Image (cartoon, rainbow, N blue to C red; front, top):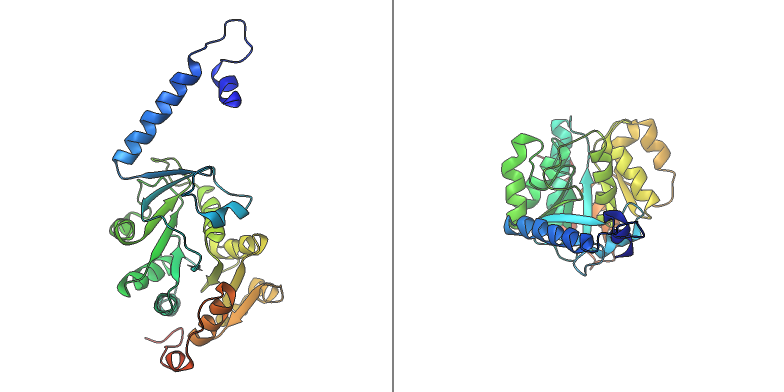
Length: 270
């Protein structure tokens, strides 16, 4: 309250405005009421609804805007990768998402083209919970062709943004989005990514946050992935069975039975 008073002119001035704080609070209350009337949830880091896992990262946003069901997600894993994904990469993302969904994991991704879209779509097809962390205002759709997907995720899972409603995409907002996605998830699985990609950036951020990183073995064709593979907290997997075993270890879930693992497809299976 002291900071707000100083900001709006009610501090130690020649002619202090004693009603400035009340007016600012009333305006903020009206703004929040308008957002909530449009189905947008507003959560500050003071609120009990604020995701607990985000409190441990230094990029914790002071405000989060949501559409959908915000609830504790301790068994959340991010699947990320390039927008310019190969067909094989998209199949790998879909198979990974389906397998994680079957084991009760919430699949988190960024609603971008390519790997993100494949992961979200596969999770929804399997009836699982998916969380989209976006780099625009919660009421915008980017890319435009994912509007229907975003609306479905809001209806069946959760769309989350740290940006003010109406905020347009910028070159800076997506790296910020990656930091929040990393903090929300217990681990980040990288499917397909070049050196200059948001997915590689998220792997770096995840390690900074003390989160595990899982690299698909095919990524070792890249210098950056071979370097990351030597770091503590980084796992390299070559199959869906290995992925589930590693994720199980990371999030301390109920072990997956060997019989069910034998039935799982490989990453790139059609």
